[in-house]
Image 1: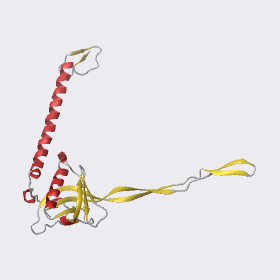
Image 2 (image 1 turned 120 degrees about the vertical axis):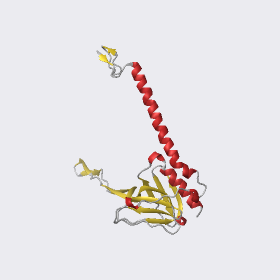
Image 3 (image 1 turned 120 degrees about the horizontal axis):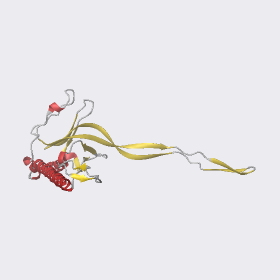
Image 4 (image 1 turned 60 degrees about the horizontal axis):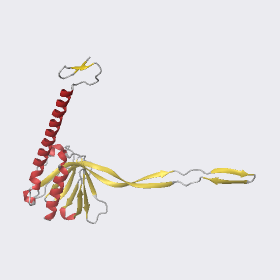
Length: 218
């Protein structure tokens, strides 16, 4: 005879349940409350992180962030602030580029069908051909920074080249949950930064708000 694993009450000979009805209902209510509490906690933390940005009316109101250089290997490039430059947003990201991926599709050989003496023909012959599609390729990893003077990408590995764009060179941009795309004047391909971390789904909003404010004052 089975017993409830929680309260020990008998469940009967033919029951396949592990808990009695009351214990099951209580557990489900408790789990629902815990889930709601966790979601509320995350939402509160998200709001706290976002508050300094959504209340900012100008660049001067934005948070001022220190870049911890200890996160970089000793041999990597050093990020140097310009005079009167302040970092307002920073996150781990990858720099990506759009490349063409070509694939060869081999042709098929022809089959010969004999219809009779001295009479035959070939069917099914096809030449090979290439197909091409755009793919996103990771170029380097590092830290994406937005300051009151530029958008910069500080690489981690010494062989990777850092990137620095003046705000006045940014033609347009787009921000999604996992990426920020920057279009530079007189450059055909955009710079695509994929976010490595987006805790509480807040970093994309921070980047979007910061970029909007700093560009509005260029």
